[in-house]
Length: 135
Image 1 (cartoon, rainbow, N blue to C red):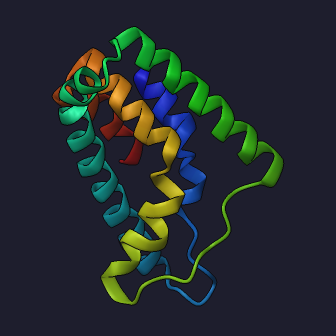
Image 2 (image 1 turned 90 degrees about the vertical axis):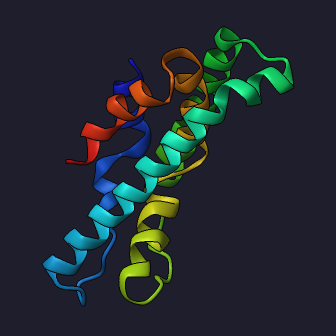
């Protein structure tokens, strides 16, 4: 379920935001770099989910419901406004971070999903569930 939710949240079609001036090779490298950055962020957030939820006094089932609500809100926004617009990118390899990783791959929906899945599955299993999405 976490893998399906992450696939819907990430929307792999957004990984390809490069304009026509960029070469295919640069777009592929940017997409791969962005995916690796997001996978590292998801794993880190999942690893901190237990202490985070404990400090907030939130149970794992409540976090799961919150993640569902966040995904519905983000999905509704995307359905109404369409995909995120390409933002001015950073030069060189930094373009994998902005605009590919943020905002095209990693947004509030995936962040909340990482906390919820990390509480349920643990960081390693969350990374395994989300990792195959970008291969």
